[in-house]
Amino acid sequence: MKKTPELSHFGLFVCDVERMAAFYRDVLGFVETDRGTLGDKQLIFLSGDPREHHQLVFVSGLSKPPDEEVVNQISFRLQTLEDLLEFHRTIVTCNVDDVRPINHGNAWSIYFRDPEGNRIEVTVDSPWYVSQPNRDPFDVRLSADQIRIETEAWCRRKPSFEPAERFRERVAAKISEASPKAG
Image (tube, rainbow, N blue to C red):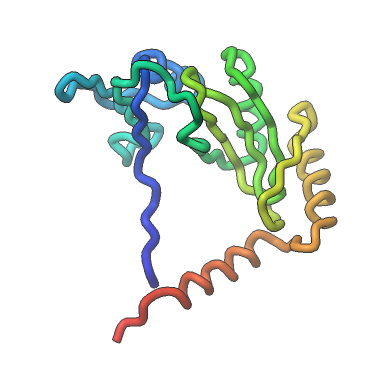
């Protein structure tokens, strides 16, 4: 089977390397693992996984943020819907811009902006699959159980509804079929 590379890290050129590092530390909980200079560039390395030297690296050098978005989003995963709701309660106290809770059917996400306008997604998979894209707001004031009930009902109304595990099995079969055969 062909091995798909896992995401290792993300590097961004930024205007204010200290402010960006502080945001990702204070709001998202990353820790600084290293910092230094390379030529005239300052680099700050951050990680939330002790197996990864860095998952993010911010590199100084932009004189101003781009006039148009060049990164659609930087996505991070949490394990449970309860974790996501707790995360939402935390970020609303951090003066984060453009906070949007979105139900995709196959996942729940909280979208928001970092200090230089990059869109961040923190997401949790749901146990269901519906074809994408879907973008339906959900009420973070509800309990996790109530959100699950409402999401499942919403998903079941979609023609593509199925358990996420069945969807993953189909994708695994496609990947296996697409893999070069050893000969």
